[in-house]
Length: 62
Image (cartoon, rainbow, N blue to C red; front, side, top):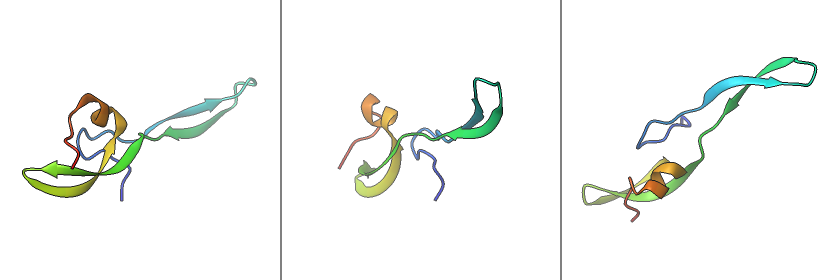
């Protein structure tokens, strides 16, 4: 499964590691996803949700 938040759509972003010698290598920053049980339209399902969505109250935990 993709590393994408099912609520806000947040996904990995890409950039560079930069050393002191200014060498650049590609890297990616992953979103902090948690697999939680959430309530959606009265039913309970499992979803990958980022922690910013959990903290802001966009998700009702089951």
